[in-house]
Image (cartoon, rainbow, N blue to C red; front, side):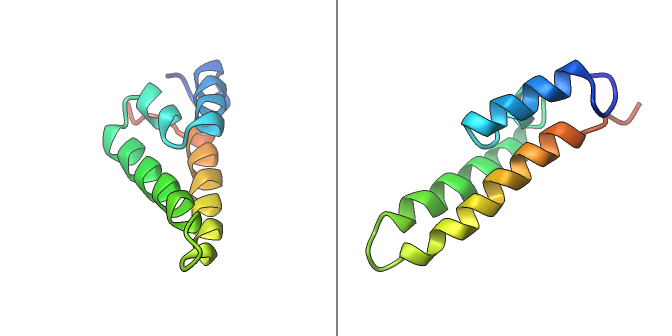
Length: 77
């Protein structure tokens, strides 16, 4: 990937919009991709239960953070 704002980062951000962590996976950041996916989807899944309905904001924050992280990523040369 080039730098921040490059076409690759835009594609990665769009990927993360649909599936949290997919943009990081496209960029080759496997651990970040797993972390964002597990936190966001886990929180969304737990919020489907009546007992843990308050978990959806955590999932939403992780999802938005995933999109921003993919868009602002700059590889160290």
